[in-house]
Amino acid sequence: MAQSAWRSYVARSIEHLKDRTSQVMRAQPVPTNTAVLPLVRFDSQDAINNFVLGSDSDLGGKSTANLDLGPEGKGRFWGQLSTQLREGRRREGVVERGGYAGLRSKSQTTIFGPRTWDTSLYDYLRLRVRSSGDGMRYFVNIQTDGPVRSDLFQHRLWLPPTPTSPSPSPSSPSSTPSTPESDQHPHQWTSILIPLADFTLTNSGDLSEVQIEMLRSRIRTVGISVLGPMEGRYELGIESIEAVSGEAVQKGEEKNMGGKEQ
Image (cartoon, helix red, strand yellow):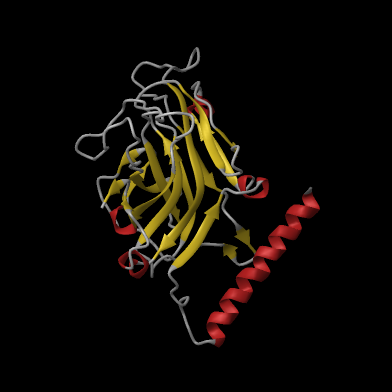
C-alpha cells in the first residue's frame, strides 16, 4: 500500500512537471483555454477513493456521510442528518452545531507542492447531479491554495424542481421533500451551472465579514456539503464537476443556471 501511494505521488509530480514544461516550451505562462476543464468525476471506485468525507460526528455529532456508486455506476452522496450532539458535547456558553455532512476531493501533493486547477479562464462551475427530492440544502465548496486553510468559497446548489415540487429560488427556497411521479419516471440527471464569480468566502462555516476575490488560478479542492434544514435521510447523485467557459454557455450547451431554469 505504501509503495502504491509513493508511485502515485511520483506520477503526479512527473505529470505536474510535464504540464509546466509544456507551457514554458510554448511560451504560454497560463494554459490555453478550452471549452471545458474536467475537475473530478464520480464514475468508478478509484474515483470515489479520491474523496474525503466528514460530518458533525467528527466533533461529537450524530450525522453520517457516505459516498458510493449507485445502481447506474455514478456517485451517490448519502447519509442521515441529525442536529443532536453526543453526551457531554454541549457546554454552557459554547455554540456547537449539528446537522451537516460533506465531501471534498483529496488534496494532490507533488514534489513541487500541491497540484491545483487553474480556472482563471473559465466562467462557470458545472455539476452533473440528480436530486432525490429530499428537500435538503446542498452547497458547493471550493478551497484555494490560499494562506488560510479554513477558508472556503461557497455557493448554494439550487437543484431544479422535480415534477411534484415547486421551483426553488433564493427568495423562496423549498424544503419540502418531493417524490418522482412514478417508478418509471425517477428524478433525472441534470447539469447545474454556477458562476465562479458568485462564490462567497466563508470561514469555519460562517460568512466572512471581509469578502475577497477567489484565487481562481489555484483551486485546490472542490466538494459538496448538506446543511439541513431538517433531520433525516439525504441523498444526492453526483456524476462530475467541471469548469466551463462562457463561450460554451453562449452556444446554448447549458440550460440550468445555479439550479434555476433560464
